[in-house]
Image (cartoon, rainbow, N blue to C red; front, side, top):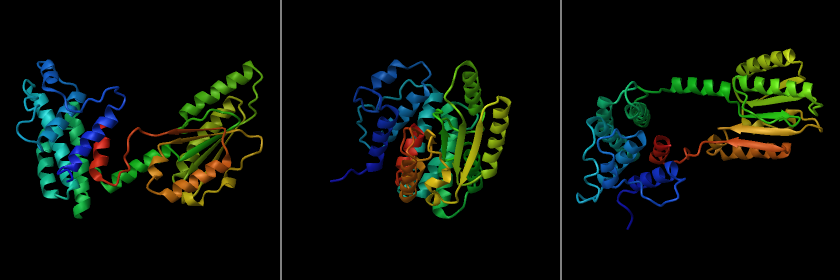
Length: 321
């Protein structure tokens, strides 16, 4: 017979494996009453409040004789409020996952009464996550986005991120790779290379950066112009190329104009995981990368799973990361 509350138990499992996976013990997420009492009289940390909120949430599904029923005795009024906020937030996410949107709104309204974007860390955390769940409910019920982060704001955020984080950068002639960003970190690298050339016989003949993007070419062009100007001031042989495709499926190896003597490094930051839901595009990109045959490829991703098709799983990963 299956569990009556699979999502609730999944929350515990995910919380334990994401936030405490470096622990060498197999302790349950639930903190014992003795541990809590040891902290009585002291302000709890944000981490402790999150753990207690998760415990209280799970207790709501268990019998009244739960062994940790007295875990919240001795907490200050502020900490008690914070723990309750976490409990309500988790419960509201659970209700959204169960399509009980009316009940989810009721719980969020209780959160909204006590949270703020200007108060303590837990209240700020709950404030923003509450807005996000409100938006999720509005989307699910067809009400649009009456509060929180709407579609336009999400688009603005995406554009801002894309101006700083193009898909991929290829650097040539054995240059360690770094994120292109606004170009600031590249100026440091370029200055170091110029100094190295002056002090020794460097094998570096030319530094070439190639940025791959699907949008905001003008933003990347601005970065290109800044870096080119800086390279000239340092008397460094430099070029910046932009590979622009409307769809990553259109990308071909020959677009990168790679010379036979070039050594290539590839840097992919926070992009491959986002493509997991589009397996055909990810496969296409990886085939191109394999064809380029880089000396090294650096991949940076967050240590959390935000691609689960189950809403409550994604929510917990984000909240407890």
